[in-house]
Length: 416
Image: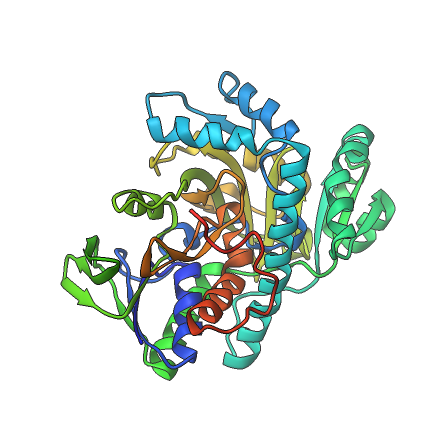
């Protein structure tokens, strides 16, 4: 078939790779001048099945409500008149039960574990490298109370297939010597040995180049999606700034903009943008930096080692489609970074960035056919899009081909 994929982030590019590998003629439409210049440009760098716990939970409900008034939290909510945000919030709140938390986390974990294998298979098959490290990820806590209460979700994931090790501070420092300087400030944590790290932008750029050269995929950069030409129960063409693109099927993988396009055509797609901040900093002294990825669960700061660079990431800010940032937005991130890795970096050399994560109320992406017989979705991956993108692309390719997916589709196939 002739398939048009909308979006050249990690999700859209992975989908294009798998679809082209199936023999389809694939065209990718991207408004930026190159791949991975939106949400996929920068993130924590974590490929993390260990972070598969859904956001919506009884604890998140309390934090979400506190964030309306307290903007010093890792989650920030900027109240303004936004009917879409209010509708999204109501759906989010309905997911904040223990039953829904467990169900949503199981689906996320299933896809995340599968996707990690898909990323590694792509790397092996194509020879692509992306500053990857396969040493695991540490999720650590600064107080005994937070350690005691914070490990519950990890234990639940372990019951459903995630290998973990609950570690005290001595074992933690043995695993990550880079945290030796703050040993006494850490009570312990969770080590997920199958988690890994890597630069999503490098991965996408190299995968897009491979797809062009080896699989004949066509990328149309600097091209804006203006709408869909629909006749009856089918999409005839994608209307773009470069003219109409006709084809046999269309895949929407436009990150946070997916919901905007879907709503225009009666598709229930509650994707909402959640802004996150990252800083990428050259290591002044590599021996003082981390050797693997990690997350300071009390400070809500994640980090990864990307070659000779340190990536810091933090914050979930509900502020619509605003992508702007100020230096002060990174102050807490740098304080924590310098506390964890003193002398490792000079914050004045940091490359600062803010981008939007496409969040679903239940934290589970939507994949599959939507309303029209030749329109498909692969979007809504939220804060772990880098982790789940390749698995969802392979899953979508199987659905389009009429093959039985390699993982249980329950909870993943679009039903809106």
